[in-house]
Image (tube, rainbow, N blue to C red):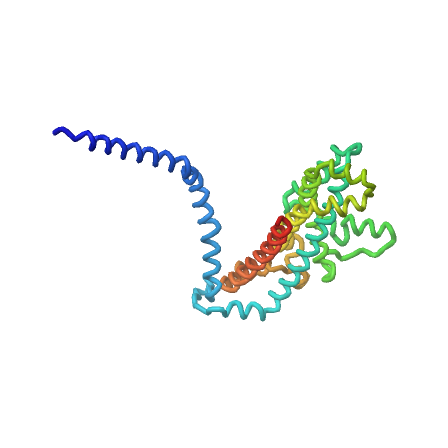
Length: 310
């Protein structure tokens, strides 16, 4: 059977269109195949756990006692009437604000110092960022020995000066700030590196032109350095706020939440309720509250950055 010439031409045209469409689709969307494994990992390690925690927050769930009962918002109402959760919320806020602000301020000071060339700069720079290279558990073991009431180096120095020793991790008024000091020592280098990168991205010509107009060091910092470094400061604040708000490891290793509830944070409250008392529903509700609190802080920081860029 002989096909008409017009039919053959239409078939060839259709095949050419299909080949062109497949080639364009492959060029545009083939990257999705490479993203698929990462997408699956994110689903199973992030989306599913978050959904499960949100689901369990509406149940009174205790796997040891075989309790699984829907309570609606009962876990949330009990949560905000729980004295230990409110103490953990207060301690978390104090820890986050104290550590974050101090780390960014110290990091800014170090960045301004190391942005200037001086003898020994290349030797001192690795020493400044050295603390963040250690494991947190190793750092806590070192600082716990330094805080020791009888044999710690801090109290040894105080006794050498004729002063009374201090109960760094035992005194309720000092324990939380002693943990904050450890976090400052470990993570100030992170804020320092972010701000140093921001300083080195500022064109030198701006400073030279300002000096020609008679600007001094304070004016240079106020009108050039600080405005151009604002986004980097917000980034450092955001990253450190998120990290300090979910603090757990240092509290667990140094004080165990004590003395009493002096250093108990939201993360430690979740651990205690979920893995010691197996009140999984209440622990899940606390985790949801913590998730939305961190999300709110992140949104506020990001909105500030977007407003500056417009």
